[in-house]
Structure formats: structure tokens, C-alpha cells
Image 1: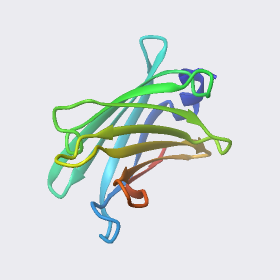
Image 2: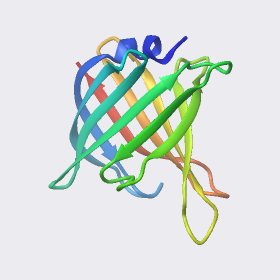
Image 3: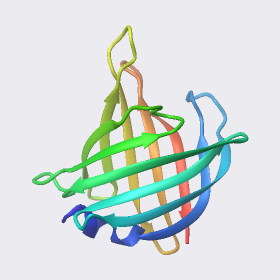
Image 4: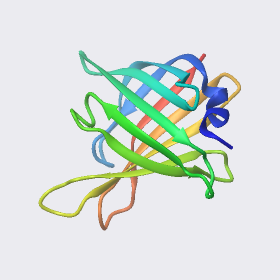
Length: 152
């Protein structure tokens, strides 16, 4: 299945709630969120979203390409005004048996090894969809940092 077909249930405009925490022991902080998902340049899908950190508005963009299977994995680039600054993060991944697209990437964490970052797109079931993001600290269990709950 190609990425455009996979993202079809997500197409359109969404509203919802973003929840963010930095460390696994922190409480989540919530903010209102929006997202627009569309087909871009015929063969790509984009997810443009907004959220806020306190009074500071934030935005992000995920651009997806390729397939969504082991034979033809999805690739993605991601930018977020809060999480990535001026850098783009690159990802690749596949859709699991549960229908969730799991994208894996990494980022530098000097002076040690790179840390991992995962973005999971949970298909829209009925009126909602969900995007979660997870931090992978070397030697530790992965933990969820972001949950973006979306509704039509």
C-alpha cells in the first residue's frame, strides 16, 4: 500500500488536544491543537499541525513518501518549531498488523550517542485519529513524549 492510500482516512482538517511531557516522570501539559492532512505533489502526504507551549504558539510539518510495508517502507521528514528547531529529522518505517504506521529516526545528543525518536500515526477510526511521539534514550525504555488526539 502506498502512503497516500494509507493516509486517506486522515485527509482533511482536524482539531484536538496536544499533550507534551519532557521526562517520563513529568505530568503532561495540554494545549489546543489543529492539523491539516493532505495529498501533496500527487505521491506524498503532509501533516501540518499547530499546538502551543504555554502562551507560545508552535507548529510542525510531517512529509511522508513511499509505501508503508516491509517491501516498500515509508520515509518521512519532520520539522517542528519546538522539537527540531531549524533542523529536519529523517524517518523510515512500516505499518504494523495493528494498522499503526511506526516511523523511526534519531537525533544527536552530544557528547554521547544519538537518541532515537519515533512518530506513530494511528489510523482514524470513526471521528478521530492520533499521533504519538516517543523518545528513545540509549539504555532506557522508550517513553511517550507527545500525544496529539484529533477529531473532525
